Every structure is written in C-alpha cells, then in structure tokens.
Length: 371
Image (cartoon, rainbow, N blue to C red; front, side, top):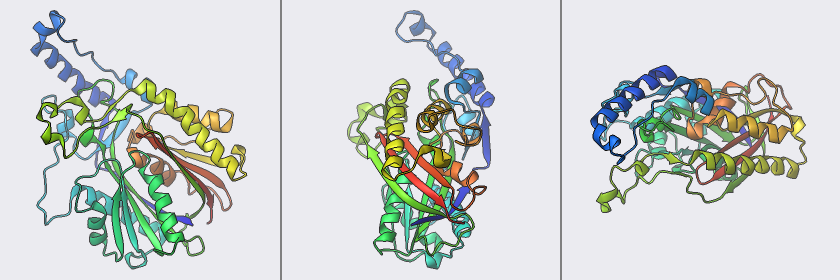
C-alpha cells in the first residue's frame, strides 16, 4: 500500500500569542472585577493572567490559524463565530476538507473518478448525520462509498490503516482520507491552561496500491500499528444527550478539558514504547529512520518521544515541528508535518508517522519513499 499524495488547507486568519494573551487578560480583568466580592470572600478564585512566555514554555506554540479571528479575540465573546449555513449549501467542515482533498488528488496525480472511497477522520464532526464524508464525496464527484470516523487526535493514522486495509482487500482502488479540524470550536478560550492550544486546518491524503502510485512524493506503507487505552484525562462531554441533563449544559466539560500533567506522564511512555516495538517487529533500527513526523501537540512531548525512540537528541529537522505556526491541530498535526517535510527525502528513505491523543489512542505508521 502507498500514501501517494497529500493536501493542506490553511485558514486565512492567524492569531499570535500576544494577540491571544491580550484578549484573555482583558477577559480575566473583566471577570475579576465582576466577581470582586466573591473573590474577596474566597467563594471563587481570581483568574490569573496569561503571558506569551508561559505559552511558549508550556507548549512551544507561537501562533495558530482560525476560521474566525474576531470572535476569539473579543473579550465579550471568546469564541469563534461561524454562522450556520442553509442545508442546501456545503457545510464549513466539508468545505475545508474538499479544499485539502483537491490538493491531495493533485499531489497523487489522481482524478475523482479514480477514487472509490472517502473517509473523513477527525476529532470534531460538525454533525452526526448525514456523514461529512458523504458530503465531501458528493462535492468532489466521487463514486463508491464514504463514512466518518473519530479517534480524536489519532484519527488520521487510524484512517490511514482503515483505508490501506480496504484497498488491500480489494474494496477500492484508492481511498481519499480527509482530516478537517475546526478545533477552535471546542476550545475554552477562557481557560488559562488551555486557551492557546488549538488551531484550525484541514489535511487530506490518498491511499492506493504501491504498484499503482504515481505521485511525485509517494510513500510505501510498510506497516501500521494501532493502540488504545481508556483514559478520562482528555475529554469532551458535548453530545446529543446534553439536553436530557439540562443541569450540565454550558459547563466546562462540554468543551475540551484535560489533565495536562497526567497526559504527559502517561502518553510519552505509551507512544515511545509503541514506536520502538513496532520498528523492532519489522526489523528496523531507529537509526535507519530519516525522519519522524510526530503528532503536534506539545514541543516538550515531541522532543522527549523523539529522544526515547532515537536514543539521542534529534538532529535539526529530523523530527520537524510545525507547532510554532499551526499550534495543535488534532488529527491533522502529524500530516501537516509530513506534508511540509517529506518531499526532500529520496527513494528508499525510511520515515515514521505517528499520532497520539485522547482515548488514549496512538497510531504508528512506517513509511518508505517510493519516488
């Protein structure tokens, strides 16, 4: 099997750390003034201000792209404003998926008529039905089948294995996998510990047989390995049953929440072990890898995982970081890193693609450059 082409859609609006901090701190000041009496009496704590230095040290993030900048930076709103569209118009999530998909098809040198299936694999689906993937399929004029899947930040690698398995089984000649992520929609911009984490983006890629791949940057999928382990440390409780429990509507757990220190402590060894064991099962020494395309959640996690896998500090460019520009883009993060930092390698080079996140979930993919 081969990953024969990739595409990337980047939203038009960027928000710097300084802009985000200015907005958050103004919100915090207004909040503290409005609740001064309760804060003074100890009923509730005052909100501490954020800082650019805090964000960079905690995450390595310096900027992010969003679908709506004004709402996010308005201290009276602190949320993107993305109007609903009539049912006759393409949904916003499908629209950005299609934009990335067109790039992937071009990269793979494929037409829509050569694709037999579409997967939309992402953390945040705009609606439960009809499937976003079927909407993308319709917009691109693709025959065959389509469905959505969600394994949080690991959705792209899980989608890659699902697509590869279906192509190998003869169910499709080629499958398009899209990872549209409007993460700003589920981020609590009033939470100092997480208001800076996410950005919006969409990636896409084509999976087909290695002997049919003709893209200029095609990679053979040598092996995939998936792992999940239940954890509540990253969670979002928003869902269709919320209205049946009105006492919970609007509470913080209906947006992204996490226990960051616990996640770091538990996910780093889990992912490192998965990668090392997967390489060993395929008789590959870590030193043979030319590049690691890791999930882009936190620079400290990425550096430690790379160090544990390689047994040394990664060389510049060996484990590329796109966090500074894009922030955490959930399922799309490792695909952005691959899209931007893979074409320079040569035929026969080995690389490793990995995603990890809520679940916990992790996907490991060993790749070899074809062209």
